[in-house]
Length: 349
Image 1 (cartoon, rainbow, N blue to C red):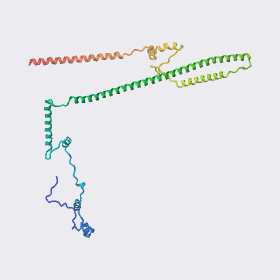
Image 2: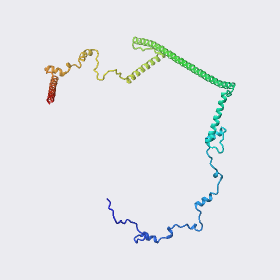
Image 3: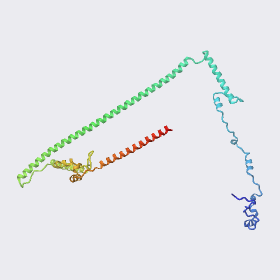
Image 4: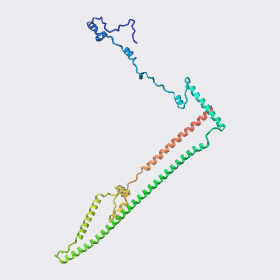
């Protein structure tokens, strides 16, 4: 806890102006006294300036019409609507009283009309009513006819579009048929050319055979017959065709892919044919059997005994089960004896 003093401690730490050690206070004595005082400027000593309030007071006398203009008061919506309908509020009448007066006049008018209707003097003439109904019916009839015309026009446009589409499809089909016919013609022409070429080739081969025979007969004499221009052209075409076929066969071989059938294995055993098939089929049939294993064949030769670890495990399991059953019987007998003892003690007491 804080210690409270009976005699207060001096807490003043500021230096007094009369203190001889206060250098600032002593220095202030030798300064100009007029420097720190709030004196008026030298230029305004002769003439007294106007204050702000005086200036505002002098300016308030000069007013314009725009400044004096009053603000428009917001009109009452009830009175404005009543004026539109030709009803005016009285000079000294309040708004509530004015509304009640209008309600009274309304009810009185309604009652008058009810009384006139009761006596059969109200309503318009039947001719006027019929004329009004006729105008309404004519307008409805015109509207229905217009809608009917619009529907008919839409149907016509749709039919026209369908016909145009059908014509376009027919033209497309015709063009397809023309193309097919042209292709057929070209195919037939190519087939004819090929037949002619084959026929010509046969002729050329026959001519060559004749020439070879003549050269053989003549011995050292050379064949004087020459191939015609047409035959030479056919030979060149034939050579080109064979080159093209070779090139395509080479490309097919390069771009060929191995086709792997469904269920085929990468590590499957090879398939043999011919003499090898007869040799390997009986061996492959025995694949996976114990007789083919080297260890099995060695054990059979050695006459090794079979392992009996499975029989031993079953015997151990049976013995364990017997021990458990004996323990459970013992526990059961103990519980029965305890129950008999408790019953005997309760009967004796």
